[in-house]
Length: 75
Image (cartoon, rainbow, N blue to C red; front, side):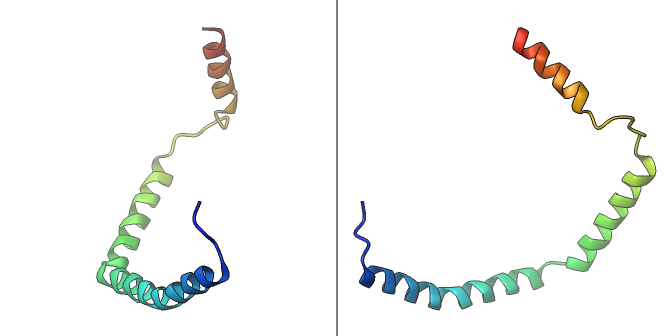
């Protein structure tokens, strides 16, 4: 087991204090490099299609799931 003492903890926190802002900068850079508006629009189109073509469900499927579990238990 690694030695956990106040000096190790201090160094660990210092490392993360330096790494955190750099990691956040990289995350923001990567996010801005993507075509976010395009993907939002594409998702909206797909979601709208799903809503218009969704089959009406009379149950949540929980009853059918429980029946399958019971069948598998007895198999």
